[in-house]
Image (cartoon, rainbow, N blue to C red; front, side, top):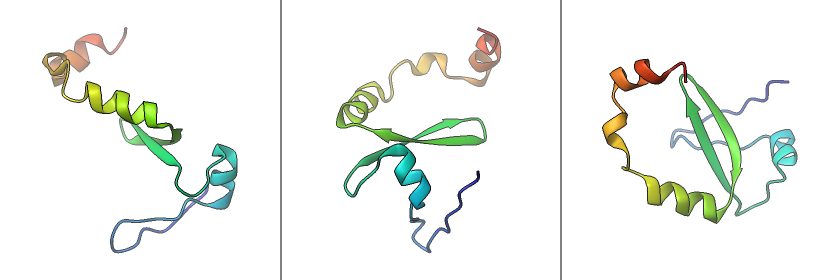
Length: 75
């Protein structure tokens, strides 16, 4: 079932109760957003996930061009 939430003028939103329950979220928990094309997944994140993502940010950029995406899309 699709759950919806409205964005405020500051682009903030409330995570709907069914989503919070499904992800076992509570106040202060971290959430992550996984972007694939025009879809975004909301995930429960841990401090380790955040540290790992920050450590990898900006690495391997030599393989991130549109040509690379096209060449490796079927792998």
